[in-house]
Image (tube, rainbow, N blue to C red; front, side, top):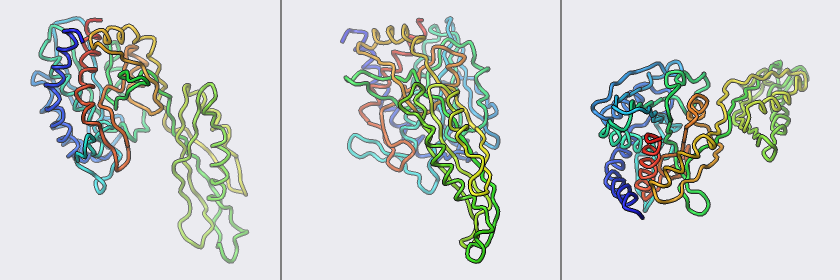
Length: 379
């Protein structure tokens, strides 16, 4: 490694113990989506850990009923503006919450990978950059509390449009060959809800008088899933995730709903599963609505020069990678071409009881974040 690389590695090593401690504090707060007091506790912690010169603002969340999101702004003396982006909500219920639990080189805990490990690195990066205000005109932090379940339109893009770059701290990864990976491409995401309306009847004495909504949804699940084309030009996936129908064990279900998760490189491809909804099955009618659409992200060409500069600083390759999962970075990529995601620690098991981050990746990913941020600000 060159002297510059050794300096970044040493700096990351010095920051890592505090990042680990703050990761433990963040994971200790159970923050399932929609729990306002839990989100407030997480935001209060983040405010304490952000640079003391931060100017804080609480702005309305994109999702009604959630705690206000947190914006921090640090004024600098340079010429470029950088947004650091993360979320504090998780998908794990309080009853299933798991505090940080080391087991060998893995650190298990609810939300550790998605994305409190990334938030801990974000906080450390904000403090480090803020200590050199000559390097930026404005450093902003946006932390939201509805990323995991949001179906409403995302409201924050206009607030930061025109920034020079956006860095999002979802979990990191390695590319084949061992290069550090950052995310430059994501599929668009959508939620398709299909409702069935039938007619109730006694399931024992007069089932022929009913119009079975559950049976209609079962047929629809197969037909709509068949519209997927994961190996096609848009890599469209159509996955049924939720079905609800019926209220009693001896009544033909009169109504129900079926939910699909849709992913594609171009959200226009979502027309295929919508068109595949059968209008009627066995007398029950079906109707679909697309309730949530997150744009696709492809910032690879725009960030290629940035990644080349970051590689030079880091002293090892940084590879732009594609990932299927959605991220708020996808929204900002529409207005901030230099948007990167996946700057958090490496881990696995997101959204499961076995979620974890690799302890030895924390210092490595801090170094990546430092290199990328400084490459951005020297643009």
